[in-house]
Image 1 (cartoon, rainbow over the protein chains, first blue to last red):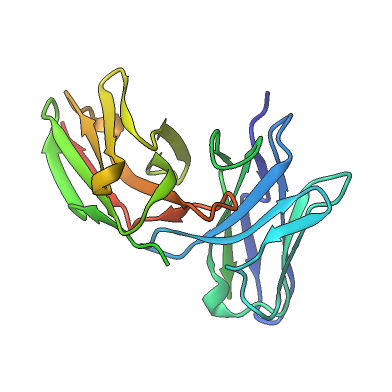
Image 2 (cartoon, rainbow over the protein chains, first blue to last red):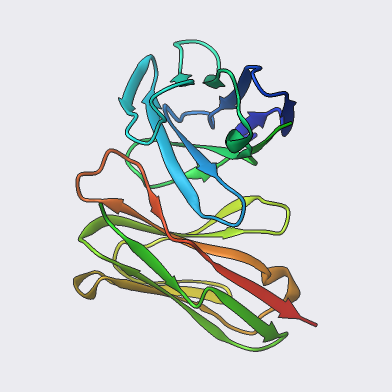
Length: 113
Length: 110
């Protein structure tokens, strides 16, 4: 069981480019959560997805950010036209349902230059 | 929304010492978890503990849901315990998301 896999581990983008972050949940987990961690801060919830459905996107910025979890393949967090303030660590977690059994991936550290 | 406060914000210990970390939350929850973020940034789930007491080796946790707080005990601390400890709660409106506290940064010196 490989756990929650996130890639890339590190991503550098210039201002205005697009960033795509991938998350493959643990085997048997159909619930995926994305969190953002700014430097020296705790994690902030962004979005909760199940296969092909967005369940809760209350933490997603209104513009430039989107997430999907297709029937096949990993969950994708997409940030369009990145700005310096998007620089952060983005963590994905998966579970079998609810909040029990949360398992986090190792995160993607996005740097916008 | 629900507020999660952790204390102390920073803690420095000598190896072998014991410590208690506290998490207060402002509303009823149906989920509470403790995580350890190591110096390499990895998040490790320590306890799922919406109520009661659990122990795992040198670590134990207690949540008193009626008084809205949880405690994480670390005994005989080791340098590998260093990192940030986060408390996270799931609101009763639960959609599965967790609300994180700001964390306690622990440094264990040899």
